[in-house]
Image (cartoon, rainbow, N blue to C red; front, side):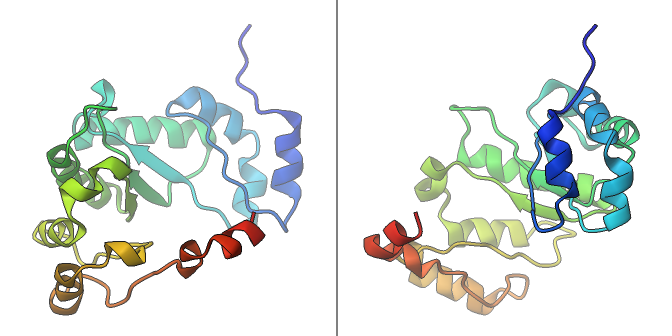
Length: 193
């Protein structure tokens, strides 16, 4: 008998209020069943995020309605509601910049129908030069329904004049740069482990 279960150490992590943990239970109702055993305590605390990771290019989630069916199955199994969406639409190593851009509209539709925000869209680092962040932000801002865009971790070497211009002039892009300055210093990184 295959009974979905999380290791006993998980319970200790969930009970420790000083710990923030990320628990990946997979993308179906079997892992969600295991998480559901702890849902009362998680919900009681009221301090959780349950992120629904979506991928437009998977067979069971090719459109918003199919994706919402999977979402409902997982929520039912774990006895918890999702709080946000992570758009991780990719086709593995053959993912192109256009694939990423095409997935944003799909993620927005899922977000609107589910009534929860998009927390982030993931992009493979090797696509960064092809996507050009300034151009990507501009294209995303043109999608109907997108109210604002926040991007994180602008490494100093990636901040271009074009990016500064988009941040300054595009009303949908948040007006700040999140720059991890510690990454420019090897001694600081070493001290941070």
